[in-house]
Length: 465
Length: 69
Image (cartoon, rainbow over all chains, first blue to last red; front, side, top):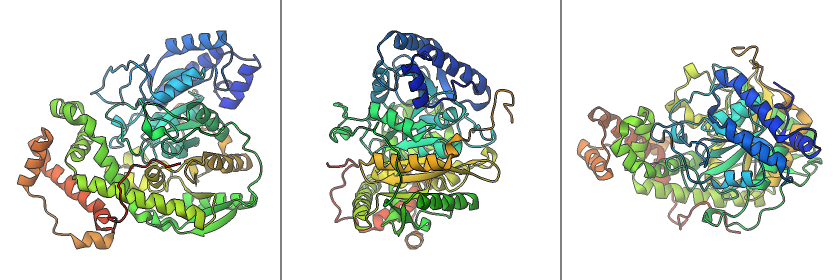
């Protein structure tokens, strides 16, 4: 990987500000890295080289607008873009071009960032199929989903940061299994306006961020957080300054450690060991670890299932009736189920969510905790040949979906490698609207452990490892 | 959850029930897929039965996830 493509957002921004590199040079380096890695990784659904170079030239000619000015990024191909197709890995949307950018994409362009392409997702982000993207740590393994391309691309340096969407773990899960940071803010902190119809689950969807450092995710969040007048989900009041320093120790910070059995099957041995080591690190950094019970946690996965299944099908009514052959079979069957599922189940899911929201909010007060720590995913990346989506998906999201459901901010940060060299993620969750606590803990952990420095063994010279 | 599932082993969705649901939804489900869809609906109801069985009635309204600040 070239030195430029390996930079963090903060490092690239510093060089741009100092005039030591140009946006065009960063964009060209990213395009070269895409050319090197795509034949094996397949992280991109579309690369807009010409558009990106034009935007980079404009950025170089303009006064700097902020820390993202001139930095190349990519977005999951469910977020609308005015100058590139948005197909959601679906034949139904083949060639679809939007007239306007999704809210978050528009905010990033307004901040001077350079959109370089669209990342591969599961078909309509449903998680019912296996996308073409491969995990750069082992090309035979699952890259995570549904923001499949975003994690892999961030890991190999074919973008500086990326936007994904997360309704059950679709940002944190791919981040964990590809060894990068995945940050899901509070529900409504970032507008999901401009998520393509058919991939939208309105009451649980979040726009999240992939980057190689925690600090970078905060630079991006600062640019995209805030009210979207067209999206009432975002009417939360003005966001804080997310660019504040994250350094310092964790002295006196109480972190809740829940009994993992409440979430579902136990984690694999490698994940359990890495999680225990991560807790030791947090303790050494000054954190006070507190055993907690998560009330009603057994309702989380059924409630998420009820809501996602109930909400996803609406936009498909006409398409699936008129052109069912354009869907892959498993996705079509899932959407058909969505369209006939009883409304009472959806209502029960909403009520269960409210119960969980209230209980979790109370827990932070009664246990006097600033955050909760869990593994992100209970296993390392599965072999694609062994994977059965219908069987495996519930387990893959058991630690992440509760926080998408209740809307609390959560991030995955690298916390180790398994014996066979596969990344493992630590998940940090905070109270609603307290993204900065997540970021501070994750940043200090990252600095103390250095796991973020480990990159996939993949290189252009050894594409098959 | 296990107890809840055991409590409704008799859940059956008849072919006529499913046909009505499909017709009302405007779907064109291939004939060979109707049995699979019936099983998927049954599994979905069973997987979420814990929600219907839980005492959630007092936690009205069933609002969205937006935080009130």
